[in-house]
Amino acid sequence: MTANPTQGKQESERAPGHLARVGVECPNCRFRQFIEIEFDQWPPVAPVAEIHKHLAEWMVSHCPDHLSLNAAANKN
Image (tube, rainbow, N blue to C red; front, side, top):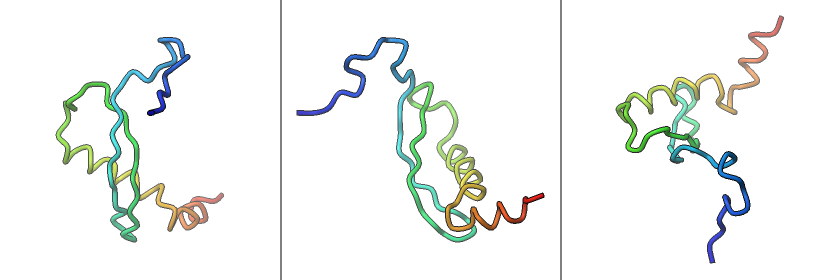
Protein backbone atom coordinates (compact mmCIF):
# COMPACT_ATOMS: atom_id res chain seq x y z
CA MET A 1 0.00 0.00 0.00
CA THR A 2 1.34 3.43 -0.88
CA ALA A 3 0.34 6.71 0.69
CA ASN A 4 -1.29 9.32 -1.49
CA PRO A 5 -0.51 12.78 -0.05
CA THR A 6 -3.03 14.50 -2.34
CA GLN A 7 -5.94 12.29 -1.29
CA GLY A 8 -8.71 14.37 0.27
CA LYS A 9 -7.26 17.69 -0.89
CA GLN A 10 -8.95 20.03 -3.28
CA GLU A 11 -7.42 20.58 -6.71
CA SER A 12 -6.20 24.09 -5.75
CA GLU A 13 -4.23 22.70 -2.76
CA ARG A 14 -2.19 20.21 -4.78
CA ALA A 15 1.40 20.93 -5.75
CA PRO A 16 1.41 22.12 -9.39
CA GLY A 17 5.00 21.18 -10.31
CA HIS A 18 7.28 18.18 -10.37
CA LEU A 19 9.46 17.48 -7.35
CA ALA A 20 13.08 16.36 -7.58
CA ARG A 21 15.63 15.61 -4.87
CA VAL A 22 19.09 16.96 -5.70
CA GLY A 23 22.35 16.37 -3.83
CA VAL A 24 24.22 19.63 -3.21
CA GLU A 25 27.64 20.12 -1.63
CA CYS A 26 28.72 23.33 0.09
CA PRO A 27 31.80 24.64 -1.77
CA ASN A 28 33.28 26.01 1.47
CA CYS A 29 33.08 23.14 3.94
CA ARG A 30 32.06 20.21 1.67
CA PHE A 31 28.93 19.50 3.76
CA ARG A 32 26.55 17.53 1.53
CA GLN A 33 22.79 17.45 1.79
CA PHE A 34 19.79 16.73 -0.39
CA ILE A 35 17.44 19.56 -1.32
CA GLU A 36 13.96 19.03 -2.70
CA ILE A 37 13.15 21.39 -5.56
CA GLU A 38 10.02 21.88 -7.64
CA PHE A 39 9.99 22.31 -11.42
CA ASP A 40 7.14 24.07 -13.21
CA GLN A 41 7.89 22.10 -16.38
CA TRP A 42 9.24 18.61 -16.85
CA PRO A 43 11.79 18.10 -18.27
CA PRO A 44 13.35 21.30 -16.93
CA VAL A 45 13.97 24.09 -19.44
CA ALA A 46 17.19 25.27 -17.75
CA PRO A 47 20.32 23.13 -18.12
CA VAL A 48 20.97 20.84 -15.16
CA ALA A 49 24.44 22.37 -14.63
CA GLU A 50 22.88 25.82 -14.23
CA ILE A 51 20.34 24.53 -11.70
CA HIS A 52 23.09 22.80 -9.74
CA LYS A 53 25.20 26.01 -9.79
CA HIS A 54 22.33 28.04 -8.32
CA LEU A 55 21.75 25.43 -5.62
CA ALA A 56 25.47 25.43 -4.71
CA GLU A 57 25.39 29.24 -4.41
CA TRP A 58 22.31 29.01 -2.20
CA MET A 59 24.01 26.36 -0.08
CA VAL A 60 26.91 28.73 0.77
CA SER A 61 24.54 31.06 2.61
CA HIS A 62 22.36 28.33 4.15
CA CYS A 63 24.85 25.61 5.12
CA PRO A 64 24.23 24.40 8.71
CA ASP A 65 27.97 24.08 9.37
CA HIS A 66 28.65 27.81 9.01
CA LEU A 67 25.22 29.44 9.31
CA SER A 68 26.04 30.72 12.80
CA LEU A 69 29.24 32.32 11.44
CA ASN A 70 27.22 34.15 8.76
CA ALA A 71 24.71 35.35 11.36
CA ALA A 72 27.49 36.64 13.63
CA ALA A 73 29.16 38.51 10.76
CA ASN A 74 25.90 40.16 9.66
CA LYS A 75 24.82 41.14 13.17
CA ASN A 76 24.23 44.88 13.70
